[in-house]
Length: 243
Image (cartoon, rainbow, N blue to C red):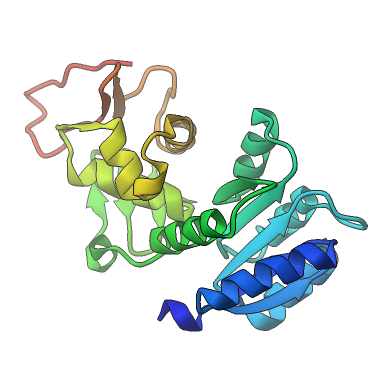
């Protein structure tokens, strides 16, 4: 149950750690603390938290460097905290494997909402019990192992990538509107944030498309949403491809 999940809060400011701890404990979580990136890496290995709240600006090892090391041995969900709201910092964190980004100052309600949304995304989906889905001769998707198989090579999917791909494949051949995808993958609180959706569509295309600039599987329906190729149709019925 969510009430028993352990959250690791990493921030060099003791006052901020106390503030986050107090509010998360009121939400029913257990909370552990670390004062810098090095301590955080040790805590993740020892305590195996359900989620990490990771500050960017810290001594000894900042949040970006800690996240890079963390992703070498753990897929634990990470929400990054920063005083900067710049797009390049946000993209850098997501590229390194963060699951979300919250800018300081933030309200306790916002952080708790983001934590719930990220934990929902890493929960097993019904597809995880299924056999690998064969799209064509070069691509298969193994939702159970969180991987895509591209020309025989297995490539790991992050939890958000897996959830996004699952929702696209489940509706193969149909246009899924932006708002519906965002709500299903990130939660209704993210409904108007299309930048996250575009970013993760690009991540998926980089992993599965032979040419991401000329998609074969994930098509953009401009101004509406995205459509996954209708692989269930016979090969004699070609699909119209839109970028």
